[in-house]
Image (cartoon, rainbow, N blue to C red; front, side, top):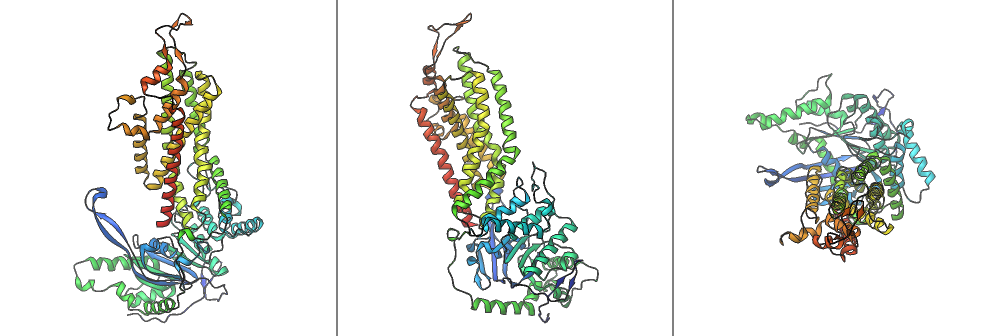
Length: 635
């Protein structure tokens, strides 16, 4: 067994990235300690798809440790539980989902203010591609720094972070996305770190910060973190898969995980000697991180093999018999004995540094800025709708009032407009999925209240994105076709289509909140919009529908829109045959009201349907909001 004397070593990062033993004076950071942390999830085994038998899978098993100021790396093979442990330490897993104790400076995890810690996601989900580097960091500062801090102070803080992260040169460049060319991967990662550093966190968590970066950029990022500790004494905790030696030598402590068990937790300087005492020697030019992964793989193969003599050795039991484990347990026992007794803070009780109105204004500004800089959601849709409207207008130019052609062309336009306005909302699925991911990241970080975020999305995204693309479509088609001659008819048509589009969009929002799979959301949206169109009242006459299916028409947005537009256009009209160049109204004429009656449309529903569309829109929004609150509560 290993019996290595534990000691603290102050390391200094030189200009070439190597370590020296010079002492450094830093401000005391926070100590994050955790004892007997266990975490399990349910998975389905066998069977077909989601109908397999449920079983429990252990992700973490009685993991303990103490993370002190410095670079604390969590290493392990894929599936070892690195990210899960990081999320639990950062407070990003529900308190009821794991067993054990997590303390920060002797306080329960739930008491730690979210604005005292930073969390950088592996995929940089907190960045908006349509905003510049400076705007992204300023957004974080505006919401997460105290409201009593002046705008100039926050601006100086942002500029200081930009300078510290060497981002000043690209500060006014777009971060970028699939539609907008942006900054490099390393600059994106540093921008994500900057959004957290702007609040001066005492603890900074990072999920695999070097993933997707080239070797030079990865070293630059880790060196940046090391310098942050040396300057400010922060506690930096991060997961990392298999770092090269130039990264490994900058770590202060490492935690090795294998299948949810801890096989080593202690100083980086003592790790190689520890494994040597176990009989595993790291060659002089081997990368220690690679060496540790190989050892864990080798021992794992022994344990799963048939040779019981070889499988008696266990890295887990060896670590639990070591002085490292005993010293950690003694320190944890002392901390738990002096633990401060306070109440658990629920999401509803979280204290935010900024007021509700400030959050609403800042979120609205960001949403509008991002929306109108995103060509796929503005310019492209406007151009597409205008082109479609021109084609429709040319096909139905100055439609006449004959019994056959006049009615058929108007009906075709009404059906097309209603169905197109509803179905076109399907393209918003991907957009809402991206927003869902960002919302979860920001809400876990204590950026804002759920209601402030939701209202800003409704007022500055959902409604404007339904209104703006519709206007050119209506203006072009309505006058080219020569529909209803009064302004009242035009604005009624516009208001009806906007309500129908908003209702359909709110259904997409609800599905996006209920499900995380883009495939399932698309399937649900397609089925819903297909049903709405089938039961819209034109493809199938409302009077001829079977009684056991008639209820579907009451939840069809397309049906309410078609009925409203039909009443608006046909009521009071008379369709007369043309003889020569004159319209002659005789017994062959058809009344617009007769057509409405044949279709089962009632004049009383002209305004009732608008009220119903408003009710559908608001109901779906309320359900979506409730789902978002539930997501935050269980996350």
